[in-house]
Length: 268
Image 1 (cartoon, rainbow, N blue to C red):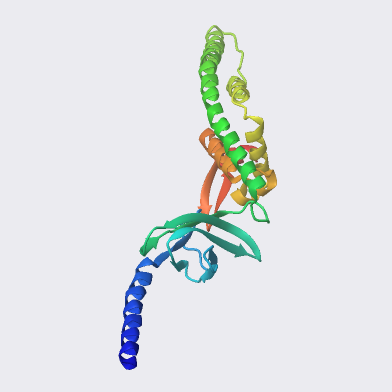
Image 2 (tube, one colour):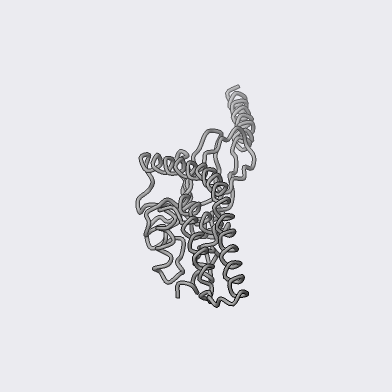
């Protein structure tokens, strides 16, 4: 009788284990993805990826690929990339695991603007910077209104130039020799247009830094010299490109800003 009870107990334990193991397997999810650089969209190798699970998991994404096994719950995945022992790129994403299965979450690393990790105060400063950049974009509408007011001035200047040329030509036809200095009136008119189209102080500051750097500078060095945010520098460079003062092109993993060839020739 005792042997029969032991057999029943053993059978019940085995049955419970058979039922529990598949349940645990089904509730475990696999989270995986690739890590990219936000400037080049190329995989970032050897980034450190961490998830705040219990216990905490951390891996080195040797080939720009990571994977974690997680139970249902809310998690925060953080990825960091180091250069010369300092965090240069970083990102943080939240994910909710509701049930077992495969979850794909790619991470896009963005630059760290300070040698230390961004804290809440620095994050608020960046938010304020983006708000200021939005105001700068709105200010471009005012510049469009200014251009409308400049059109009559330009038309009047061209009319005055035409009148002066006609008068000098007519005087020469009547025997009065009054030679017009070569391109003098054109230079005067051109100088007037340049004065009317002068750069704002902040754009002039950016242009002067590029000019003092031999007419060419990387976007990263430009940002370090001016102490502006990455977003503001990008907007200001785009504004200078639209005005025809500089041009930007990609070199390696960064951008290079240079003064257009025509302005370089005039400066020389």
